Image 1 (spheres, protein in one colour):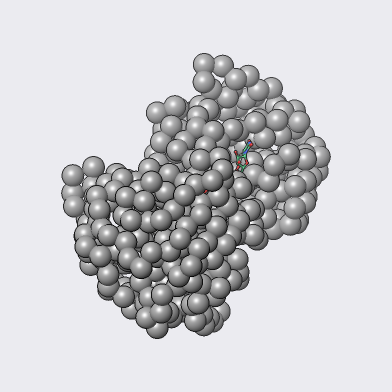
Image 2: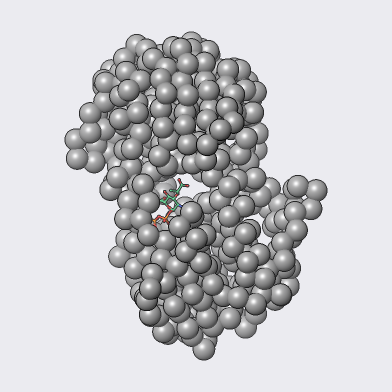
Length: 419
Ligand code: EPZ
């Protein structure tokens, strides 16, 4: 397996361009199944999770062409299979996002249960109960969700928990259902809005995306479209933390500052000088050591769980003590023991990581366990003295496009060690 070798202790100084959002691209690719004609997507990031989704769609008979490496054309007219098999779903739980579109467009879907992952049990009960409420016959057997429906009908759905992909799956299913669907307690993430904008560009009738109540009026069919995916706010936050943790200066371009409010507020609290424009943010520590911050993760627009691990790394070298509480997933501190091996003074109490900042971390061989934990180990390596080798970085390649090239652009001493 590839590894990343980082020689730390260098103050980053430079600028990077942010890629399209992984967590918008995945539902939008699934939504292409709803169309009667091809769709063209731009700013699709080159990520393993995108490759996995393309493989899944191609396996169904969807024709996908990458034009000049920038425009992705997805033509669902040749689809012959309505199955998301275990061998693909087990590598990417977001495959569940094909369930709603397949059921709404073709009346059938056999999707493997994703199973848990490193950060938690990750149940899919809200996806299943919502589709049942819309009239789907769903059996869970031999590890598969087997769903059938002549035509889904609109319903009023109240989600017990704010769930991003449940909101997305049900919103996609509702676009071709008969009548109106109302999704209460919907997720408000920018990626949900981006998916809704994509669906509306295909002719869907959706109101309220980005609020906790989404109204969808079902239509008979959806047309092709051309759409540009929004910038990745988690990649954006990760590079800003890279600047903060090294006491440096980083400017991120082609981003959406308005999607970063909770993260920027915490970076400001940590002592960063922040300036921004319409599509860029610059962070400057001017050599200062960050101050420790307290935070709690929660659904958007509150502090994102996908930035929690990165702030654990920042707190590890910050001045003072900080408490980081994870309220979304039950096991999302897998980075803690690896940070401790690098010298972090960090203890986990229940769902809170309490850190006393140390002046310096020391480089060490560490192992990635999930996407954002891996990112936090890379960040710690950038700040640590000596060399850090992060193993199992296939986790990172799922969600960060060309991470070593972008960090090298910022002045990091980092290279990929082929397995
Ligand atoms: C999405 O996952 C993101 N993935 C995750 O990003 C992100 O961490 C998460 O939302 C929270 O923001 C994609 O968008 C592809 P949830 P999702 O359903 O939708 C519970 C990354 O690093 N729940 O919002 O799977 C669940 O257990 C990834 O890019 C149910 O109980 O997360 C959790 O406690 C990691 N039943 C809470 O809801 C269900 O049917 C929120 O999970 C579904 C979820």
